[in-house]
Length: 117
Length: 107
Image (cartoon, rainbow over all chains, first blue to last red):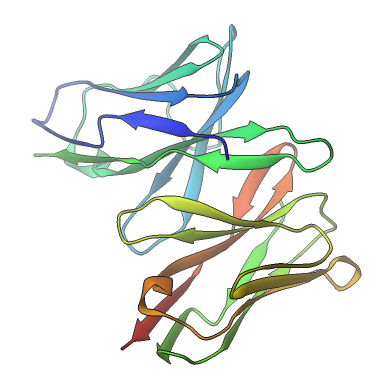
């Protein structure tokens, strides 16, 4: 199956700093990628849709100035959490659609666990 | 958006037991996927199943699109089956997830 990677897998930072998370499609091209956030023992919540070469589309309630998304190539999307605070601590997961005839399937990265002190 | 409900929220099984997880959704869908999230957080694709029945080893799934539900069957459960199982459906090119079923398989 398709492989999506994320880096770093875990990051701890001080309050007020910015953190960048990378999401790569390793064996396919992705014009669209998605960023999710997952709190402990909860489901995945879609934050934004990342579009190659254009602006990201954010879900209602997600601050675009807080969560900067850049999709500069067909295999890389980045999420930058700016001026991080403890409430931004969470598990961040990216994904991408893989087209397979009439059965498009979404594949997920392994996630990045962010802890803001 | 499409509402997705999963039941039960928690399931505790003895190794070797069989179980059924359910996913109800509020509107017709073109895409429905089942995932297993392992203890490290990785989501593993189990099935793409907008309709019909599929089997993969000890797992199988059935979606009855006209009645807006899907079932995931786990047979002869093993401790490695533990984790959270999510159902997700597509609307507007985006996936909406249910709350998940947490499965614990005891040896």
